Length: 294
Image (cartoon, rainbow, N blue to C red):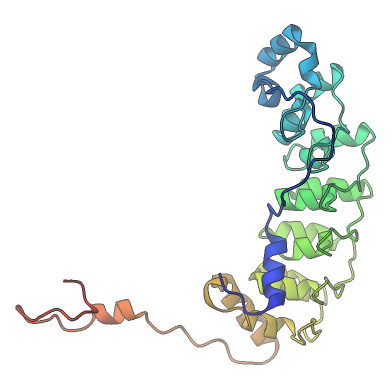
């Protein structure tokens, strides 16, 4: 895929939800035992039977450093989470990505599990190996209720990950505008810059998220702020071309053009394939040209 600028390329890479990189595991090597499936996602009675046979299964780790509690919190299994905790599972155990069970719980929409992890005393602003906080992980999971819960428990949206992105930047490029709407309640600096100089509106524009762009404009985001390339949000979305440009980019550009008093984009011309379909059919017996199927 080709990008219009290094800024656009870098931004789109960072906004990808699964941006994990290969990690070197410096912990001492130890035995790796597969975690029984019932301890990851239930059913509960089967999980109880597994723990009765092997109580140590509550704390064993797999090849990724995950415990059964990592899986149960991620899968939103509240009763299973409570069972594992009662059997000595450590909610603050870290997997190979440096994530504890609070980081994993926010990928589920089950707020009761996230509350339980917070009640276990886990740091609401703890970072994983990539500098990501539970709030950042919740935005990746796409659950506004979890984002709201973390903010109410003093999650800091200004913390930046190792790519220089804060939770505000992440929300600006998210597909679900409800995530940004929740984040905007915490009164962010709308002109806060990422490491490429992009404001929140630049990020929404380059990601093609028109609903997010509208939320930011309504919140008085600057239309004329320039990023590290000297581009305004309108110029940034205009620079997105080729395969990187999807339908949302046209919508954002037309919205920003309207605010700037400019005419909308011209309708795209009909594709060559449609034009061909309207041409008169060849007479029977005509030789096919090299550009036509025989």
